[in-house]
Picture 1 (tube, rainbow, N blue to C red):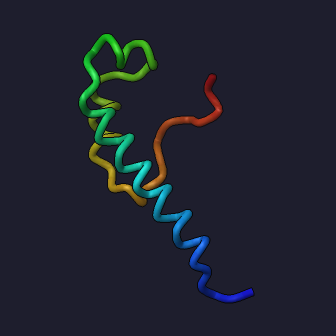
Picture 2 (picture 1 turned 90 degrees about the vertical axis):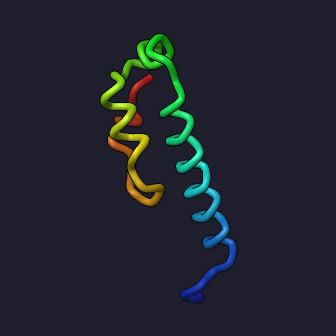
Picture 3 (picture 1 turned 135 degrees about the vertical axis):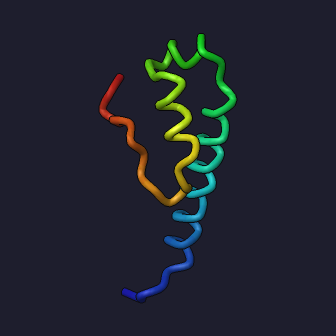
Length: 63
């Protein structure tokens, strides 16, 4: 298996761009929408200011 895979690189880049977009959108939500998804303004701000390569602080197991 090669050390560098263009397909893996594209996938990682796509995920980074998606994460960056999601975090930027999180910063634009109003308090009502934040309450709907169960996070506070402070949590949204903290998450929104993280860099795109850092993993999220939210639990993905929630439904």
